[in-house]
Image: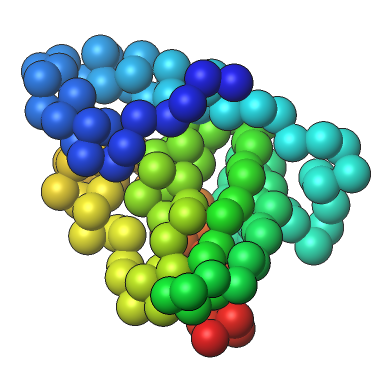
Length: 141
């Protein structure tokens, strides 16, 4: 797996890409950087409901000096959705449970202009992923 760029770098890169076809290709490229989840982690417990595509988020909570740190891995059977998982990982993974619980990534995705170019189903799936991660973080406070 390649190391994912930071969310700030992803945001900058989206800013350089004028054409939405190029942005979609970049999103797919980001998804391609993710390691596939092992079959054992593609479980009902890790599956995100509310997504038309199959999406799994495996979450690890690590005690730390600034509270519980949440790391997650994700996968999807759809290339664009897997790219959305990658951007979500760049935004949330490695952050404190408090940050994740209190920070709605929808605003950050809207700043990238992503949701306005997603189908309604994909946009709803993105919100479902964000809500799932925020609920998991909230449960670990």
